[in-house]
Picture 1 (cartoon, rainbow, N blue to C red):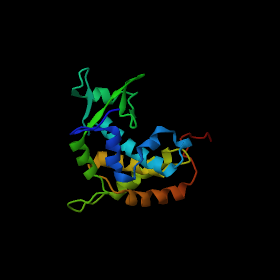
Picture 2: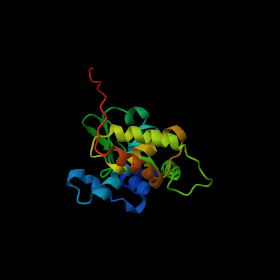
Picture 3: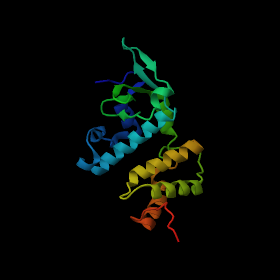
Length: 197
């Protein structure tokens, strides 16, 4: 089993850092449909989604190991293929359709990204563009099929906003916007088909 060393963090340790102590990474060893604690699974999955997003977006340096055990930087081509995925429990990434390999992430870069999340204590007050947050939230909620997973939507909204603005509002603030939207649309589904008249 891979272990963190110095600036090289396993995905398991990275997800724990993202979610602090409330994350039980082992929840991700099973599917959500059979999870004994769905809220804990959702928290772990939100941290996993964030980590995967940062890796695919090139915002977080990743490392593999060569045949002699030396750490090697993984290029963006290894982290952006359509089949790319991560297994947080085993700290593996899929680099080919049926091939998995060990992956580590840079602790220092991860800490910088975590500090940029709105849940932290900013050094200066950050003003968010709430019309952008609301727009992203509406699109995400309407595109998600019922039953809509609140935690996953909040993470998606935060990540999309951070791509455009290099910072993101906190979960509570986004949750208030999203709850209002979800309360309004309920289980309705957006139809993109135009009916003939």
